[in-house]
Length: 325
Image (tube, rainbow, N blue to C red; front, side, top):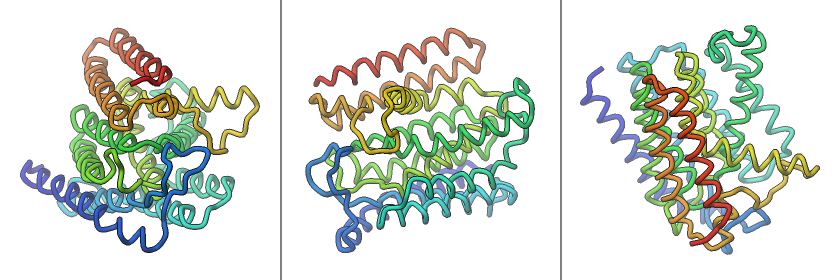
C-alpha cells in the first residue's frame, strides 16, 4: 500500500464530507428537513438534520477507491452496499417516520445478509459454539448500529466518537484494509464536525448515525475476529456503557425503551448545565485514554488495560451524571 495514495484518499474523504455537509445545510433547510425539538432533544430550535449523508458518502467513495487500488477484496462490497441500504431506510425515517418494528426488521435483514463476512466461531474466539457465536455477533452488531443512533443527540458527540474510533482502528488494525478504512472514517468524521461542532448548524440524522454504526460495528467485529477482542471492546466503551446502562435502567423500570427520552448520561450532563462543546471535549479526552488502553491491552497488559479502560469510562459517566460545568 502506498502511503501517498492512502493520504490522498483520506484527505479526499475529509473534503467530501466537510464541503458536502456544508452544501447540504441550505438544501435540508429548503426541504424542511429539520429536527423539531421533542422530549429527547437538547435544543430549543429546529436544526437541519440529514447532514450524515455526506460522511457516509465519503466513506463509501473511499471504500471504492481502496478497492480500485486493490487494497480491499471485492468480497467485502456487501458492507458498503448494506450501509447504503440502511442510509436509504434511515433517510425515509428522517423524512416521514417509520415504525420501530419495521426499521428493526430491515436492519436485522441487512446484518444477517452481511454476517457471512464474520466466520462462525471467529468473533468470540471459540468460546462459544459456532452457531451461538454467529447469533451473538448478529445481535451485538444490531445493537451497536442502534446505540450509535441513540447517542447522536448532542453537538459534536457522534462525530467525535466516530473520529476517535477511526483513529483507534488506524493505530491498532491487524491489516492494511482495516487501517485504511479507519483513517477514512476518521477523516470523514472530522469533515462533518466542521459543521456539527457546537453550536451545530446541522445534525447527522438517522441517515448518518445508523449506517455509521453499521460500518464501525463491522470493523470492530473484524478486529475481534483477528484476535484483538480487547481493543474491539475498549475503543467504543463509552458509547457502549452510556447506551446500555441507560436502556437497561429504563427496561428494569418497565418503560418502553424505544421511546424518546433524555436519560442518557450525556443528556443529563447538558441538561445539568454542561455545554455541548465541553461535553464533546470530555468524551474526546476519555477516548484518547481508551485508545491508549486498547494499545496496552493488545501488548501484554491485558487486565491492567481493561481495568484502566473501565475506570476511565466510570469516571466519565460520573462526571456527566453530575451535569455541572
